[in-house]
Every structure is written in structure tokens, then in C-alpha cells.
Length: 565
Image 1: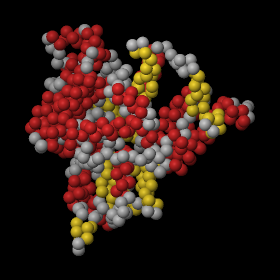
Image 2: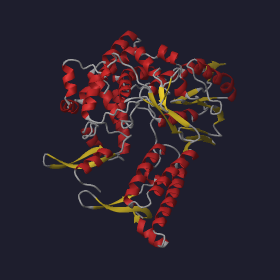
Image 3: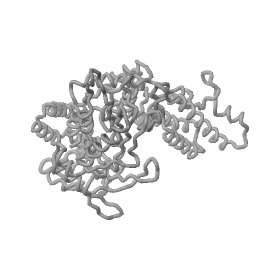
Image 4: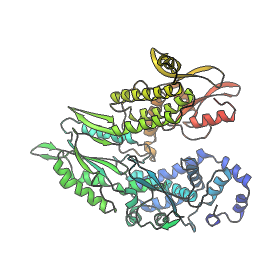
């Protein structure tokens, strides 16, 4: 760690020099207490924001960013996310408890100077262009995570109700469900939509606008915005934009785009004309930098709304992409967040896009072709993980035909995989070797394996059509704030109902989940619908019992006990 970041003078310096003590201190942190203390301050920030008492907001943000518990949670977020093994320009990783504790003790705004970003490029979905990513150092990531804890309550309180991207408690299904409801209303159903796309949103946000409008420490924010980046061992300045890859960047981007819904709502209101209620049917739904605006006619979208949106964006240094911003009739359909939304007769249907199906099958074929010699059991586990994620995402739409089509394509890929392994065997032999009769289905791709207790069990490949039937999605209420104490009961009930669906209605597992405080007993992280989970048998106080744990924790626990499958 760089000594210039250290605030551990005198007594604290002794702690930093003792690796064993630092390691013990990190392991003994009461994370439940840390979350309670941080949540308490976040609730107060929400109330102050609602009352427009911005001096109180500033004071509370200062208290939070200088709290040890907040610093510890910030470091924990950095060392547990997907980028924990990716260093910045300094090459430093916090991969031991002692380093994590030392980092938490050293986080400070005094003499803080943000290091340049490490620029890398990743392929976009269309593979024609590459997306620039700016990777901060571990220390800068922790500082961003710390200040995000203080900024996110303000962002959630002032956010547009129909913004769903990069927000706690909201997801793509909420956006699609709102669009479905808006386009399905009787008599007031809009016929035209504006598909909006912002050209390089993260890369072109005005620094001046951010510094003038984002309610946080301006000096810290300026250092992040002006830190520059290094590419091919050369230093480049940053004059605009907030880097993709920074922890706080999604929050900054959301706050930049918030306010468009209010502008549209004030201009396009329901009015009475000759005693009759007239609605322009203008609705906005936004997910990150992608948005859809509905309207009753094409002319209003083209001549009024599109210029209005362009002016709104230009104030923030942004421009609309001319090639991707198009006006479409709902009977022709449009793509949004991997779904094709189109009106057939009097009915709106949301289906997976052809591009989404193609990308998914490319991933499936990549797995089957890349593991020609692996065990059938291992292949099933790898494929099930992909099928489970894809099916859970799309099961809230009209996906029956799509699921059947994908199931058939998966079967063909597996048949080629099996034929390649046994080129001299007949079709009947291959079928009997890999496909078995299970619950009346003679074409079930299944493999026998031994469990950790020595008993034999059978692992089957998931089928989209049968494993993921249509499930009606309940859209989140627009005014619900996850940081507001008054909304806590709503989010608890919502999480419980979502978890019950994930547990496939098994109330015994739901009871176990509640008994554990909705957390994994191994890592202490919440068990939710986003991470895979497993049931781990164990012995407590001489009695056999089950624990609900993360799938990763389950595998690590088995490896540590020497029980490899």
C-alpha cells in the first residue's frame, strides 16, 4: 500500500505493522453492526433529501464517509466483486485479510490523489466495436465505493420513477413489465415509440454539469473525473465523461439522465377537450442509457419530443445516436433489453430477440465444442448454469415457441458432441448411453453420479420449455425507495415472494432462509435471487441439519473437507 494514503500515525501505525493483528481485526469485524450503522445514516440522508435540507445531507454524508464501518464495507465490496483479481496501474491487489484491514484503516480524503485509470477495451455484443473500460486502482475503487454509500440514498430519492437500470431493487424485467402495461391499456394505448440511444453516454457526460449538480464532495469528484488514463504506457487526459469500470459511474450516469421524465410529464398532461379527457399517451421508461418514449402519433415524437430530448441531453454534454434513435410503430415491433415487443392484433407479446437466441446458442456450442472429452456430468453442470440464467431472465414473456426452438438446438449440439466421442458407434447405442427415460421422457440427457455421502443420484439437463413455464412478473412500485425506512417492509415482502419462486415453492427452504437471516452462514453475504444457492447438509450440536448456502461457498466447503465429486 502507498504510504501517502495512510492516516495511521502514532498508535495505529503499530497495528499496520502487525500483519497477524490486522488479519484478526478484519476477521472479527461485526458486519451486521456495520450494515446497521451505515443504514441508519443512509435513512437520515433520505429524510433530509425529502425535506430538501441539503446542509443536513452534506453533514450526514461527511459522517458516513468518515465512519470506520462504512470504510470497511467499501473495502469489502471491492474485494468481493467480480473485479477483485483485476489490478489498476499500480498492480496492487488486496488478497489477504491483513491487506484488507490495512486498506480500511487507510481510506481518507486527506491528501488524497486519484491515480490514472488502466484503459482496456472489451468487445461489444455486435463485435464490430470495442467498449473502453477504465480500471481504477484498488484504493480508488474503495474510495468510490465509500462515497457511493453516501450518494446512492440521494440518487434513489431524486431519481425518475421509471428509471430501472443500475438501481437497487430494480431490474430489466421491471422496465419490460412497465412497457407492456403502458402499451396494453384499452382505448389509451399508444401506437408509436421512440427508441432512444445516447452516443457514448459514459464517455461524454459534461464534467462541468457533474460538478455543478452532483451533491457530493466536489474536490473528490473532480479528482476522479480529471485523473486521466494510461494506454500503451502513455498518459491521456480526461476532459469529459465518467469512466466505465468505476464503481460510482453508474450512479453518476443515472443522476445525469434523471429529470427527463419530469420534463415530459409537465409538458404532456391529460387535458379535457370539449368535456372529454384527452391523453397524449406519452410514457418514458429508461434502463441506464437506453430509453423508450411512447406517444399516440408519429408527428409529436418526431417534431416535438425528439428535439426536446436532444436539448435535455445537450445541456449535459450528450447527443442522441442518429442511427440507433428511431421511431417505430408497435405493430412492427422493437427490441429492448433483449426482448422483442410487438403488437399482434389486440395483444402485446414480449419475446426473446433473434439476436439474443443466436448469442445464447453460440455460448452453448462454445461449451460443447470446448469440452469434447469431459464427463457428461460436468458438461450438464456447465450447461445447466447457462440455461438456468437465460430461462429465468426470459420466463416472464411469451417464450413458449422460443424455448422449444432453443431446446431443439441444444439437443442437436449435444448429439454432435456425443457422435464426436463415439464415431464408430451406432445411433441407438449413443442414444442409450447418454439419453434416458425419466418421468416418461425417453430423450432426457442425464448422467449418474455419486453424492458426497456415497449414494448414487442422477443429474439431468434442464429444458427451457418444461423447467421455466410462464411466470407473471410483479412490477415494482415507482415511488419505493430501498433506503427509506418506510419502504423496508415492502422490499422484505417483495424479496420473500421472489425467493419463494426461486425455491420453487418449497416453504421448508424458505423457512430455512428466514431462519438464517437471509444470509449465507459461510460468507455472511445475502442469499438472493441473483446468485446460485445450494443445500448443504451439516451437523450442529450433534444433530443433522441443512444449511442454505451460496453455490460457490458449497463447493469451497466440500473442497476443504476433501469431498470432491
